[in-house]
Image 1 (cartoon, rainbow, N blue to C red):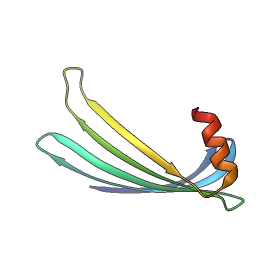
Image 2 (image 1 turned 90 degrees about the horizontal axis):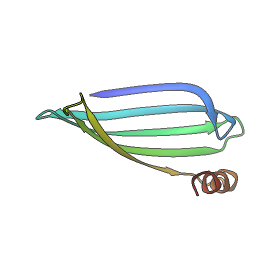
Image 3 (image 1 turned 90 degrees about the vertical axis):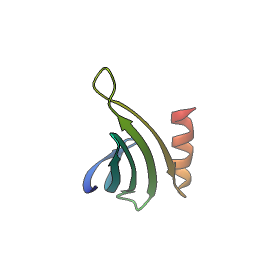
Length: 86
C-alpha cells in the first residue's frame, strides 16, 4: 500500500508546508510501514522525518507501535527541537 499527501501547517509555531509518502504491507494480520516526510518553512528551513510503524489486532481492537527520527541542518530548529524534547 502507498499513500501520499501534502498540506500546510505549523512546526514549532512557524508556518510550513509538508510533503509525505507512506509505504506499508499487511501480512499475516500484521501491518508494517514507513513514512517519509519533509517539512519546509516559508523561510526555506527544512525538517526531514522518518517513521517506522507496526500494528495488528488485539483484544481491545488494535495495537500499534511506532518510532520517528527528525533531522535538520537548521541551527534554529536544532535548538528549538532540543529545548522542546529535553
